[in-house]
Amino acid sequence: MLRLKLKAHRLKDPILRKIRSGLRSILLLEYKKKELELRKRLSFATDDQKEIEILKQRHDLSMSLHRSPINCFFYGNHMGDLVQDPDSLFWYCPHHIP
Image 1 (cartoon, rainbow, N blue to C red):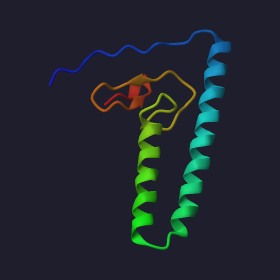
Image 2: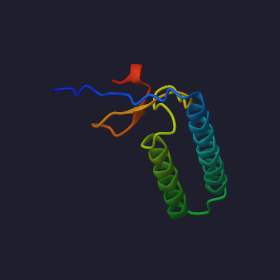
Image 3: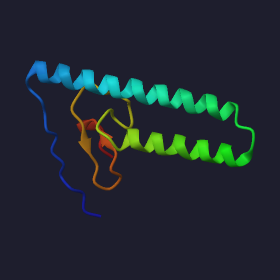
């Protein structure tokens, strides 16, 4: 299989890096808040249908996190530059691309 050479778009301006990091941190906090809410709902689920629905929502939430440029899929780093793998659509640190 032919692998594509991926190029990371690097931010050099420290102010822009700080803004990017702040936005990613806010999005990550919102993700964790929603994940906690779904975990609580799952613990109070009374029937299998509700449990399946909540598990699907958790899966969708997890996939949306990994397929958005918020953090590295492998290491969770959200401070640096990221590159998207076109095969998996996940985002990685440039030196962690599979």
